[in-house]
Amino acid sequence: MAPAPSSSLATAGHGKTKSGRSSSSAVRPALLAIAVSVMVVLLMAVLFGARWTPSGGHGGGADTSWVSAGALVVLNAVSSQQGADPVVKVAQPHDRLLGGLLSPDFNDTSCLSRYRASLYRRRSLHVLSSHLVSALRRYESLHRLCGPGTSAYERAVARLRSPSSSNTTSDAPSECSYLVWTPHAGLGNRMLSITSAFLYALLTGRVLLFHRPGDDMKDLFCEPFPGATWVLPEKDFPIRGMERFGIRTRESLGNALGRGEGGRDPPPPWMYVHLRHDYTRPGASDRLFFCDDGQDALRRVGWVVLLSDNYFVPGLFLIPRYERELSRMFPRRDAVFHHLGRYLFHPSNTVWGMVMRYHGSYLAKAEERVGVQVRTFSWAPISTDELYGQIVSCAQGENILPRVRESSSGSDNATAIPGSGRQQQQRPARRKAVLVVSLHGEYYERIRDMYYEHGAAGGDAVSVFQPTHLGGQRSEERMHNQKALAEMMLLSFSDVALTSAASTFGYVSHGLAGLRPWVLMVPVRKKAPNPPCRLAATVEPCFHTPPHYDCQARTKGDNGKTVRHVRHCEDLKDGVQLVD
Image 1 (tube, helix red, strand yellow):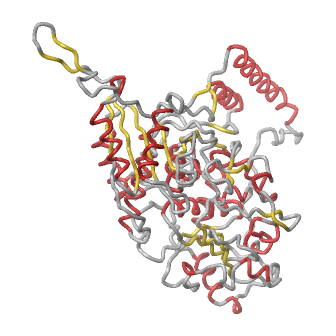
Image 2 (image 1 turned 120 degrees about the horizontal axis):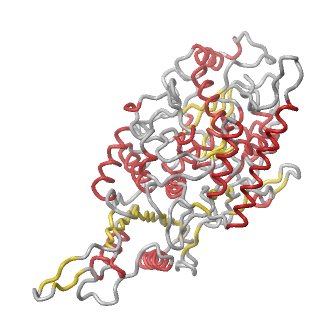
Image 3 (image 1 turned 60 degrees about the vertical axis):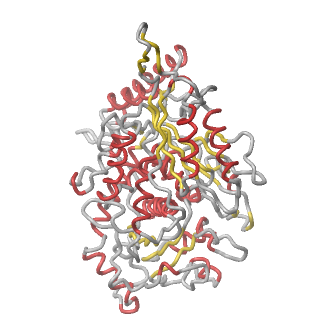
């Protein structure tokens, strides 16, 4: 197996002078000047009042966790004095490459959404590490070298098909190694697990391949990597039935470790990693994926097949060997999905057409867009009436939506024209578009009717829209997934988000937007809790089923207390998420 690409970055001051002596002494004054400049800027910010720059102003819901205006000045000052990219940076308005996150090596028309989606979202102020940008460019080169259609890929498949006839020895590394992702559960879960798999591929020098056994994921996403496909060719791939793998699959990591075959020599040609929600059941060893034992067992395996319905990124932060690299990629741990999601997920032209038609017809003229995403679960039952009351209580209590007028007679926006007996319509105080996304239509209808029958206090013009109400989740259908992705994108254009607890659909939407949402808390004994909602502490999704395992003690543990940046989720107490 090829070693992981180098994670080091070239740094100033390590060159040689013409005389052969180190130039570090010449660099020290410049570094000292930079340090002094930074300290002066920070001191001025403290003395004269540093003002945080959120993504946008919204009463009660402004997100102030991103980066301060003073910090932007510091970053720009450091960049200009070093003559190079700063350690972290923020994308400028209308930057089609999002500060270097996206590669410029694509044809615009092949994927209209890639360079245009950011134009419809509020400007992201989540800092982007230059180390992550470098890691993405290295990965793209690796994918071009090893991806489907290359001679390296054909050789790797041949070794997988006939490992005993391979000319390589157990000590000779393979040219390329692979991580094959296979779909499971709904689209939100799939997008979160793909993101997790991609980060793991970055950390381990593997090439991520997208297993697409049916047509439910076709014409959904654009290719994310330039010059190569990430779709696994199904026809000649020797491992079959991957979508049916489970915890009892003999080739699974957990079963191999249970048989004492974790570090066998030679390593197996492929291994399966089971990180579906049932991987933590008693007696299962798959949770050792997040321990050194599991990583050692996988290190020299050429092909790893992964099935997961989890956002297991927080689990990767629990593995000590990846700690340094992760901290360099993500100086702020609360923006991992925001960056990787915007890098990976670009709707196909078919889906983007749906998004643009709906946005242009209903949302484009609004001065504020409110996204309301409603999802119910069998494990958290609540009546329609009770949940509707919870939504309204949260939205009006936190000034997300205006209250209605006390009297339904007359109009707040009409004034009499003297002597004419007529009224003229005043311009509304603000045009507010409310996008409701739910499998059911009742919540949209009630919110719409509330403002239609009574009007908004204060004179706001509130329009309420819902693109679809499909009645149930059908993730095995392509059109269903295309509509779901279109709605995720529309929600990601919101200025403020209100979302249901534990919804992966909501995680994706506000994660792409870079918004801390207002979260409708889980019902208590079928009743809305008090308070009805809470502003999320982080943009990051929740890892619903972490291992809760202490690798050193080899016993149960609380992963919400293992490392500083991983804490229990507010919307699901057993889950964990990244915070900063």
